[in-house]
Amino acid sequence: MYNMFTKSVSLFASVLALFSSTLASAQGIVITSGANCIVNGNANLIVNDGGLNNSGTFVPGNGTVFFSGTANATITSISGTSSTSFYNLGINKSAGTAKLSRNIAVSNSLLMQLGNLDLSGFDLDLGSTGNIAGESASSAVQGPSGGAILRTINLNAPSAVNPGNMGIEITSTANLGLTTIRRGNQQQVNSSGYGINRYYDIVPANNTALNATLKFYYLDNELATINESELKLWSSANSGASWTLLGSDAQDAAANFVLKNGIGQFNRVTLASSVSHPLPVFFLSFSGQILNNNVQLSWSTGFELNNHHFEMEKSADGRNFSLLAKVLSSGNSNATSSYQSTDFNAFANSGLNYYRIKQVNNDGTFSYSKVLSFSRAAYANAFISVYPNPSNGPVHLRFTSNGALKTTLVQVVDLKGRLIEAKSISIQNGLNDIPYDVSHLAQGTYFLKLSGIEDRGISIIKN
Image (cartoon, rainbow, N blue to C red; front, side):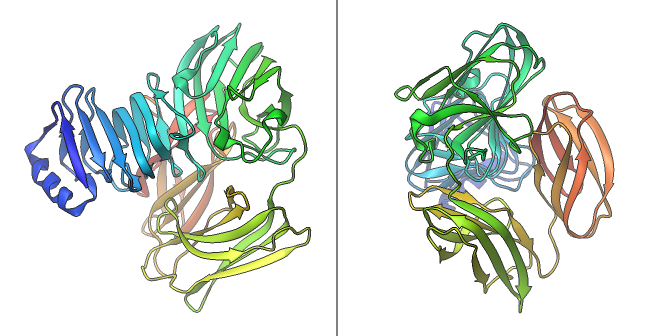
């Protein structure tokens, strides 16, 4: 690992020794609790084959942090305090992938030069000033396991505005007001079968009589085997539970876009075929149990089309998963198929284990099952997810508790850091899945935090 500083980078004395030890450990840059790293002016900080683990304070100035090299790199660690904010963040990796392990913010530019950035279930917030530059098939933001890019903007009678250069162009005769846009890269399921690996949640302050035009861009490697000539715009008013075909008024396979006029209201949108295409695999069930200190997973499918194999994946934190076992599939089948796989070293640590099944198609595309968790001993305090997200009604808070607390304080914070409300809820030892009503909140983006469980907040969009 090698760190190179160009122009000027100022470090507080408390962190100088820390950087020396980090170089030797080849972990990248580690900012411990209480330490400070300050970038003066528009300096460049280049991290080659390493990551940034921030549990202290990072002040980005007007500088650029580049991640380069060939190894997989984690930008920020799960541990730490508030999310790390960058001025410019650059990805320039000839091999390997840069990954998030917590929410981050970029206030100016996300510079995609070479290699991919995997959100890994976390959010990258561009705020009201950030943008994406240079995204292409060889250097893209991805999020197969979740996470999103967020951007807020005032859209008053916009004309061909592409907020944050996120890949969606908006024109409208109406004033939409303050609008939050959330781009995800998970495949959406609709009545035709499945969509491309990209969707947007568009949440304007004014969402009626818009008479809007939407130009939806995509990358070729997001098509998920769908024929480009079949692509149409689809909309969902309930976070993807059901979909309405809007169609298209123009599309260009060379320029990679689909355009639709006369949209009266914005919701979640994606591109999918208007021709019925069955899903490659339909999961009937997925469950697990502890047997003789081993974790046995069982799942079944209703039908399979061009399915190659399944992968049993395991995680200690519910975010970062690794391959545990591979199970060959039945291939093409219209009958119920049942599978099992066992983790024979389930409790090498005393913490909580998470499991999911990755289904891999013949062409290399894949999808995930839901996540299961098991613990032989004590559970850890961890905020796992909020769903559905976006939502216009109750959401479910999914988290684990070690049993030391009987209640937790749910805090709702807006994008300016203001506390909107706080409510105490009862919790139990182990896995909790608790509904929380957000229907009374104004439309927009918020952060939900659980006092005593985990300082990390999870962003939600209220639509």
